[in-house]
Image (cartoon, rainbow, N blue to C red; front, side):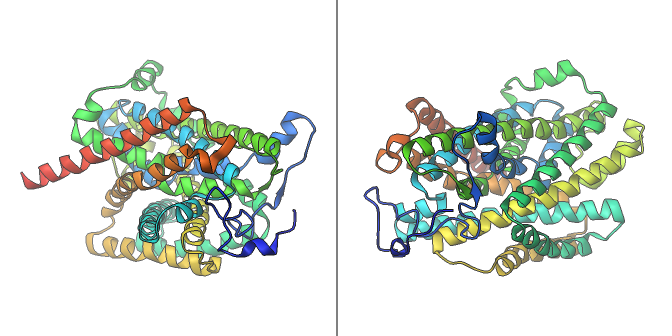
Length: 456
């Protein structure tokens, strides 16, 4: 790893493009540029050096909050909301490509770039909103992991919520072993989830024709308030705000060459990495909804948004005792892997916006406490049946936070002064603006519909 220029650590030193020097403070300092990237050699070997960050991002497709929205959508509306899954995935691919390009072109993660660009009050507001998104993400992981522990080991839900605080030690151990080990752990968890769903889908035997028709757009997704609510939940669970900050930080763990040719190659490989990972995650993500549609909707069970109810119904409906076990194992793998990415995103957001470097232990315990306390309180007051409703709600909160991460990302990506020769092509920026506009419009409609129904 090239040595740091100590003179560049002065926060007052800015580059001509308005950003601080990339050497001023590396994103995720303990892992910054720690993964070597060879020069020359075959394509596949150079690409393998960049393989990994995309899979940390892809975990956002499979976190427990996504399960609740997909189960509710599939069981109530069949395959209809597969279009929402597909559209969300395509949006994610475009936005994560912009993230990789921004990070490599400027040497800044999204939080740092926002701090450099916006006024202090605006940056502070964006930081608060980003933290809320991370807490909403962590809330889903806490509840999902606790439910998985209950399904597998019979641990009461309130105790499972408290046990999830121990995951901080797993994450710290993985980080101490090197960033590649962290990526390998997450990739292994994704493989476990995928294999579990392949097994369940083989038992469910869904209709291929019905699946294909589900990927076609339907007007009812916008006109029906419940479908729109679940579609936005799927959007929030897929295009997650913290993932945008996460990707711009972890892509800088690669020690790519900082000359124009090296940056161009890094952008190409980082984009390919995230696109492949998100394409694979689309298949896993869609399989959750397909399983719900085939197992519950087509058998006349109607809406099944509760993870425990879904678990209990799988064995009698699919005729195999292994089905609910696969479901619970996949849910646990989902919670464990997504908690890693939330921790990393929290570090990036806090360090980037505030230049505040907390111990990973302290940072993780603060974030997890903000999720554990309300989760435990609501479960104790309203009972364990409230857990799945909390999961869906957390994903809608994420969707409502999206514009405050997407709009700055798109704006910064369009700035030729900051991006220079690495500014995205115009067609990609037009698509990105359309995505940002659609996200804002859908969220506005949800708020209006909710206000109208509440006042009527």
